[in-house]
Amino acid sequence: VQLQASGGGLVQAGGSLRLSCAASGFSINIMGWYRQAPGKQRALVAVIGSGGSTSYADSVKGRFTISRDNAKNTVYLQMNSLKPEDTAVYYCNANVVYWGKGTLVTVSS
Image 1 (cartoon, rainbow, N blue to C red):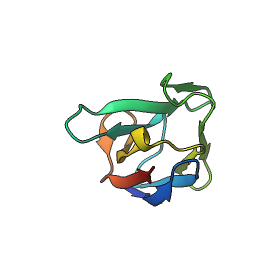
Image 2: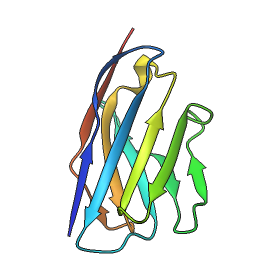
Image 3: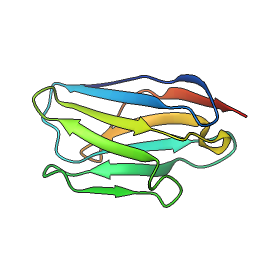
């Protein structure tokens, strides 16, 4: 059982990044992206169900899009119009119980 997240990096405010999370060793049902900023608790960013239904934190609605490729057992997070306050370590989660290692997103002003 493994979740491999990638795609983080440094970007200027207003820029875009796409995060990917590939699962191996099990089938994905519900998957989500969470983030943890320095000094703050981990918080839900977006979640996608097995049928494609999605839900987003208010702070990212209209800017972030979560999607999945079931054939590749992979979930994506397209992040547009990034803001400095989006700076955090981003974690993917699968089926509630499995966590990937985080990937750092840094947005400079």
